[in-house]
Image (tube, rainbow, N blue to C red):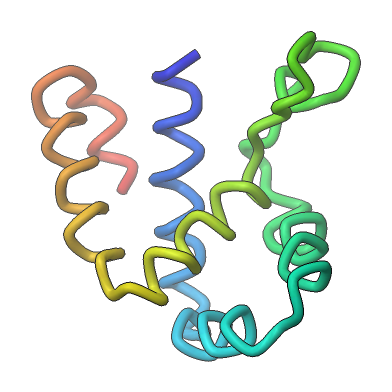
Length: 106
C-alpha cells in the first residue's frame, strides 16, 4: 500500500508542476474556506490515469481512499509551508533506493 501511495504522491506532484499552475493553486487553497479546501480534493487531478480501484469506497475498508486528489491537496499544503521541493526530493531518494524503475517515470 505504501508503494502505491508513494507513486500517487510523486505522479501527482509531477502533474501539478507540469501544468505550471502550482503556485496559483497553492494561493487558491490558502484563501479557500475550510470546506472549499476539502472539496478541492474531489476536483484536482480527478481524471488522473493512475487512480485505481484501490482508491474506491468499495475497496477501502478504512474509508481512506487515497487518490490523486488527496495527493494534490497534500502537495498544496507543502506549498503553503514551502517544503514541497524538499519533500519531493526525499521521495525521489526513496525511489532511487527501492524503486529505481519508477523513478525513471518522473
